[in-house]
Length: 242
Image (cartoon, rainbow, N blue to C red; front, side):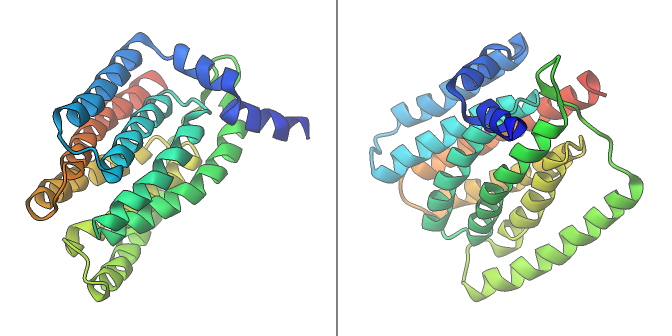
C-alpha cells in the first residue's frame, strides 16, 4: 500500500514534478529550454489564435517536457505524458491522421503501465530508471509484431479514407513498440522513436500543403524538435546508462 502510494506521489506529486525538472542535467535543461522556446515562438509568430492552435501549443509544451524527463528516466514524465497524449489525439483526429489517433490512444493507456513498471525498476540513489538491453529473440519478435500491426492499421486507414495512409499507418505500430519497450526500460526503444519522428516530420511537412491553419506548422516544428530530442535520448541511454 505504501509502495503504491509512493508510486503515484512520484508521478503526480507537485514536489516530485518540480524536483525531477530541477534535477535534470544541465545539457538536458538547455535542450528543454530550446524546445519550449521553439514551440512558443512558433505560436507567437502565427496569426492563428483558434482553439486548435492553442491546443497544439499546450500539446507541444507537454510533449517536450515529457521528452526531457524520459531522456533521464524521471518518473514524473508520465504526468506530462498523459496530458500530451490526450490533447494530441484531438489534434490528430482533426487532421484525419487516424494512425496517429490510435497511436496516441494506445500511448495514453500505456502511461499507467509505465507508472507501475518504472517505479519498480527505479534507481533510488539517482532518482532515475535503470535502462536494460533487449535480448535478440525479443528483438526479432518485435520486428515481426511491428510488421503485422502495420499491415492491419494500413487496411483500416484505407477504409477510413485517411491521409498519407502508407506513412501514417507506420506511426501506430512504431508507437506501440516504442511504448512497450519504454515501459519495460529497454534502451532500444529509441530506435522506434527515431523512426516515428522521421515519419512524422514527413507527414506533417505534407500536411502543410493540404490543411488550413497554422497548427499544422506548429505540429511540424514539434516533430522536428522531437526528432532532435530522440537523437539526444539515444545518446544518453546508450552512453550514460550503458
